[in-house]
Image 1 (tube, rainbow, N blue to C red):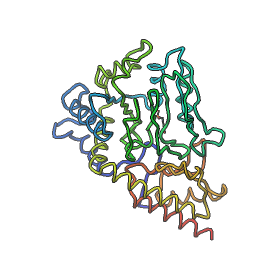
Image 2: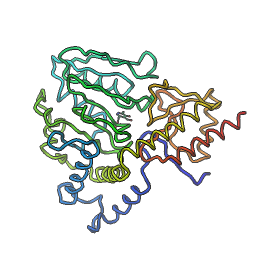
Image 3: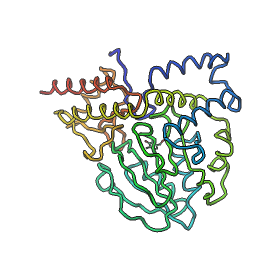
Image 4: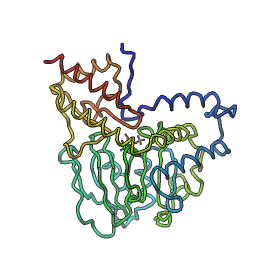
Length: 359
Ligand SMILES: Cc1ncc(COP(=O)(O)O)c(C=O)c1O
């Protein structure tokens, strides 16, 4: 059994040791308050300060201003956002455009069909999502919004460039937020589940333009309404204090390192792993080169026996969470912000060592 354990899982994903240590301390005594972070009230000044700093850091990291954008911390994961977006912004007789680059984007679109019409603007379903679909030069008229998924966690593809949208542009950034420099100002609303790049499961970050709040198309139960969440400053109901605090620690970690440095390391990590896999005699990469993700590297063994042997080899090496998503099979190494270059080097060395057992 290896003393090393590295979590390459797609989420819940690895956290930096400095963050888990701080979380452990805060469970005993939060910031000298004498209370565990698990028992501090969601409507008290301790949590107010956590929320305030988390919101400020999000806007700072996105280079967005508080006069234009709101930051929300909601429960319900990505799935609730798939539902809330059309409930709030898709009129029954209207239409929204969805870019279908994988399971999550298509699920988001399916959710929307319950509330209004959806137009599939571009899809790569025909090639099993091995590449990104081609965005059309012109969009149909009168769309209420366009939705896309910036990184396709299951298939290992990622958009690196975005466009100026003629209508509000919404994005699921769950698996690549704060992993690279990005013009967040192109988006009117974006969201990210925390358990990949910014913390633990239980909370989802939503950033949206204040101006959208005047475009809500139907009355909604408060928990499903962005307007109500904004009015309640993310504490409409009992907030997931520990999950938001975990996200704050990740935001501090990301701010301290700086997104440019994180991007640089993410490029090195992905480059190293793709190069190793390209040279490997045991594996093949699945996503097409121009579409490849820097966050999720998806590959498979050249035959079932190789796959089984590599799984056992990973267990022996302490390489965790590397199985591919059940829809695709094979393997997937998630290289989110908390994964270090030396850990990717460890995985690359393991692949090279495994190759040698075959030659
Ligand atoms: C891009 C993307 N969107 C949405 C989700 C769904 O998130 P949740 O399980 O928190 O609803 C996932 C989960 O992995 C994802 O990768």
